[in-house]
Image (cartoon, rainbow, N blue to C red; front, side, top):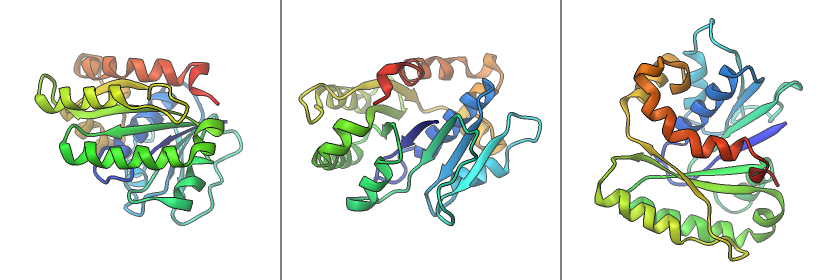
Length: 217
């Protein structure tokens, strides 16, 4: 079973947007997908509740209220993490995943919070080096802004515990298509290509990585 964790302790960085769109992407391609929501706000569960019956099914796992037991036939398990998770709880969640995707917003506050979080990940050296691969995604970016260039520069300078460059794969734009998709329980990959092609294209570097052996331990 492929397990992908979307995590950043900073609230409001778009974790659920990434989690639901990944779940929708794999489901629309015929994969058996489970979406586990660890966030007490339950946004991923709300998204699934709004999902039309005629769309590819996605199994719901309310991980705030029950043990993490996705259906046995699950091929892709997407984990939507809560905000403000640290220490042992963070390490326990990391151990559940093969791959970690960290969304970061292009603002000074979010960049500073990401700096602290990446240092915490570096402290969990054994978990990061042995059990999980990770990358970062710039999220809700208004292109050609100073904040976007600052975030790109910051992410490009970060290092993993073994000295390698921290992977930075995609820039996802601030788009109303994500709002429209969320309201309907869909991903941008399940909406009309004529409306969403620019958004889909921005996912390609991340999807290529997730679908390759390079994203697996």
